Length: 331
Image (cartoon, rainbow, N blue to C red; front, top):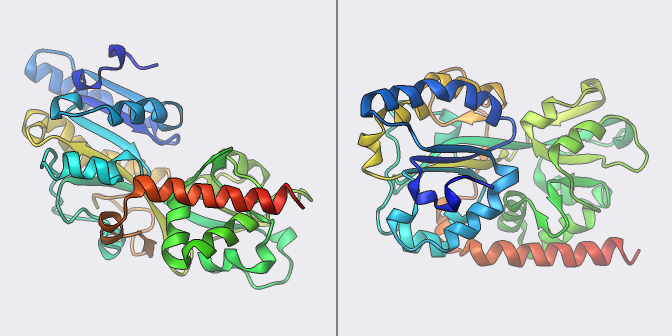
């Protein structure tokens, strides 16, 4: 559980960090936090937690928020989370609470994919790209899949894995397949996917030749690079773009001035280098970045604004799980 009795409005910063980022982020964040504290004469109130451990607690809290004062000054999380639901957008984004960090220089891949918020309220701090990984020993001599559509082909049936557990599957994958291939694409994906796994588990088993293991994985590039037997897998950056899972920070307008040291840190070279070192694509082009000039697939702000992801994601998840159970529990 978090401190402050769950009253996140007391915090200057709450950051739900992706697993590979949390520990190195803690090491480099002390300097800007201390600099801010020295200037204002009080400690920075912040919590840095693993997104995997605390996301449900935070999202339950966000559902109960009604005022700007209910939020921390800065709030960071990853994925297509509550920030992207219509109820949240209409209640808070339309009210103009947040202001995106200005970008004098941006990542070219993210710019080409039109990832950045046209309303200049959400700061897309980074993209956590998801790629395809194929177990070469078990795939055989067939042509390798080159895009997400290939994963829906009959030869992939029952051989695919992506992040998921019980009734919770990666919303980014579901949204991408639905946008390009409709509800039939979701059913084909379910027929290809006997079960979900955490990406760390995928990294352990891909390429080890297990007869019953997955043959194709959709997984973050960081975990793909962690596979021990790299010579036994193919890591494929899809022709139609690596899936762009966002790492988003919301910063209140007044916090852009009041917390200048922290804002500068989020836009600075040290954090950009850290994000690149864990195979993410930094939004601020301060250094040579992973994926610079490589194609990304972003579901699009038009799609986000014209669909209520708070309803679409549960609907897609239900359709996916229903088909998955019919395919694998009844076979």
